[in-house]
Amino acid sequence: MKVSVLIPTYQEAKYIGRCLESLIANDFDFATSGSEILVIDGYSTDGTREIIAQYVAKYSFIRLLDNPKTVQVVALNIGLAAATGDIIIRCDAHSEYPSNYISELVKWHKKGIAANIGGCWLTLPGDDSIRAHAIASVMRHPLGVGFTYRTAPRGRERFVDTVPFGSWRRETIEALGPFDEEFIRAQDLEYNMRLRAWGLRILMLPWLRIRYYARETFEKAAQMFYQYGYWKNKVNKKYGMLSSTRQLLPPLFLFGLVALLIVVPFKWPTALYALGTYLLMYLIPIFIASFFITKHQPPERRIFSFFLLVIVAFMMAHFSYGGGYLKGFFDIFIFRKNNLPGHLNSTTR
Image (cartoon, rainbow, N blue to C red; front, side, top):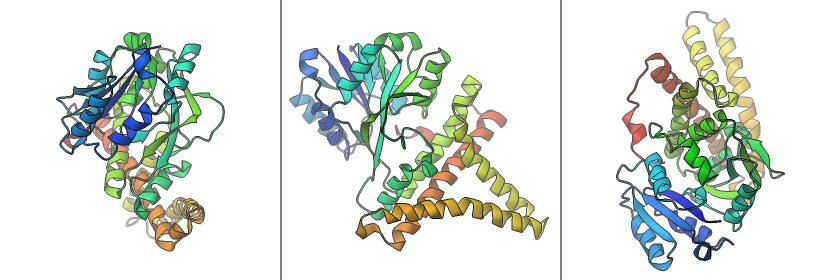
């Protein structure tokens, strides 16, 4: 079968080489099958385009396409319009793929049991700092990101509500249509909701581990979680339902915390005791999880400062996501804003 791999990029000089090398090293023969890798770049200025150009010159099956609007969802639709494959596989430049990634997806698509098929993440630190290792540890932990493809254990294939990046047969794409370009973020979630609304299924192959590089700073990670939370609301509004109930936990916790803080001055000291209990119920599991994460680190990271950074990373993930979700809820459902915040439109990732 002929395959088209789509890779949206913008300012990915640090990662795009490793991403392409992992795909080229796959046990799938791109050249003989007439398959292709399409890299759709938003006019990067950090050297990304120059790196891609080197691969284009060396491999006839790699092409560079331009994305004048920069944002990722537009890049995906440019790629879909240019793709010639029977199977379309979306990849992310921030990741490296196992050597059997393409062949496994092709094999399972031939079975015809699911419309979207993908693997799951092995989350790695964005650099070698203890801060980056702490962030990656939280993004691998169910207490940090829930029970999803980010934390799935190895095992048998199973049907799920979403997979990272995704792959589809051409006829599925033609039936569902392109990605919705209103979704500057969460376009993959929206597409999976659309697919499920049609009665189609999503299959995860837990043994197909994608090496995903997490954000290396708290600022970048917080922005990512904030955007995840914010855009969930737009997906929920479009389909009139929740994509999953677990998305409600961080915003409900944050809402409860704010409510208690408001009540404390008026219901002193009862509300203060309630606030203390509320925080302890939140912090104790985080302290326990952080202790065990630190305990299983190599000796150089089995230190108190790493333990504290893990606690901070947990709180960053929960408060950023919860804050983004609540802001999105008020913007989209209460104030019914059509023009969403400009800072969420500024980058592809």
